[in-house]
Image (cartoon, rainbow, N blue to C red; front, side):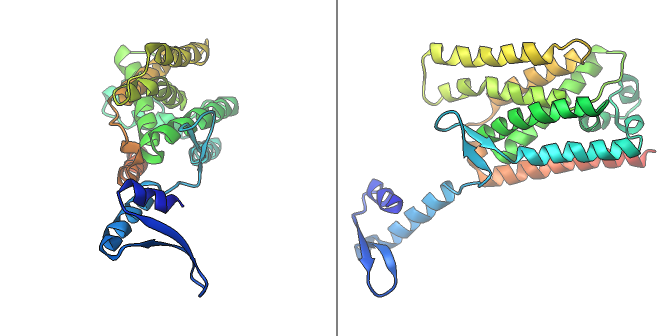
Length: 270
């Protein structure tokens, strides 16, 4: 039935028919339309290939990507290694070390945490916010954008010259929140909506940032830098890029490289 609607939308007349010889249900089209019908159905299948880990939540078009659990498993793995090996000295974000050429600490610090409570907090909020960002922007592209926002948060800490070393994935989590906050404005470029529907969604993200991002004793600069970077990346993000499977695969590949290479440099220097 879905395929018949696709063909009708392309001006191809079709009939749903049941064959008694074992072939089951099928579509009948005129012979001159056969090749065009096959091409239309193939394009439809390619454009609507479902990622089984993405499920609709809250409202139509709002997806949650359970692939965020893989990110949780990754930071948990680093946490387990960190409990046995002192990775902090190799990967913590330190302004003085970065000025000495250790730029990779902007990346490696995302994967380190001060204690189990710190790790658990980022894992819980990160799974939720990153899962929503990956559902809206694409599995690979949403993950990469959030990671780059977290790195930008560390860069903001370095540029401002914060004296204390910092570590943790909270900048990346705030980056996911920034991507979510600006999402409605991106779609206004394609299908204009009244401002009364857009502004509350954005300010809801801002309020969540104020609640989570300004917690005393945390790196507020990294949080704000990650949140603002997420907003900027989300605003610049091309519409429908996340629906492109090649873009998602490439983004996932770049994400993996930006995890592996900085850690390889950090460990090889020690």
